[in-house]
Image: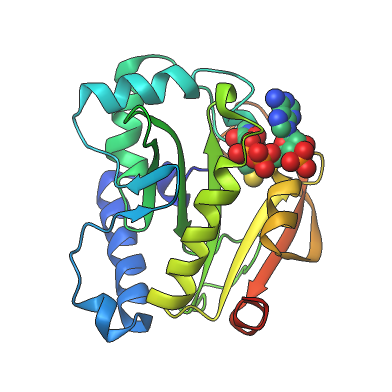
Length: 227
Ligand SMILES: CC(C)(COP(=O)(O)OP(=O)(O)OC[C@H]1O[C@@H](n2cnc3c(N)ncnc32)[C@H](O)[C@@H]1OP(=O)(O)O)[C@@H](O)C(=O)NCCC(=O)NCCS
């Protein structure tokens, strides 16, 4: 992915949902991190992970450049972007939520993908009272940048942030069982297979689209045992 569960919520509901995510993460995070700047920016060797900019033409144009490619969004269960204006709305209504980051290439300064942690989706935890100390990882990157290990690089930093700064107990992920590119990313990150959720409806895609989704998880103990 990355689209948020908030994608099909109204503006008011989206704000409420963003508050809930922030409340859950603030409750769990370390004191050191809690006192840091609200606008988190993470860095890796080749990348800067920073919030998407609302009402910013450059961010919207970059997003449209990569998210208008039909090989990108539908693999992550979200629809192709139809115009720069559509991309600008998506930044405002979907992507600019806590713990979601534009993946910016240091070499060019351009956002080329998106990555983040969100509240657990129903396919992972169907209950209303979802645990506040677990979140779900999602990501995508523009096709010209596939195969360079950029999302694994970004995701390793997001996992570090999730376990060290936010003090999460587990980070989950899902992918279509036929999405072998995403499967490889989660293999590299060490997320184990927990189960396959069969015949899951993809509500953002046009028509009645159902997929079998791999449900995967990395626990805090596994993360620290491994690093
Ligand atoms: C899945 C995705 C995020 C992987 O990001 P990435 O930075 O390219 O990750 P990697 O470089 O580690 O490549 C992962 C795998 O993709 C495959 N791959 C790489 N380049 C490819 C290309 N040009 N065409 C097709 N597959 C390719 C390889 O199998 C690779 O695994 P390997 O390193 O063992 O050979 C990216 O392909 C993408 O955004 N896809 C569309 C959206 C999507 O599927 N999002 C995830 C939804 S759960």
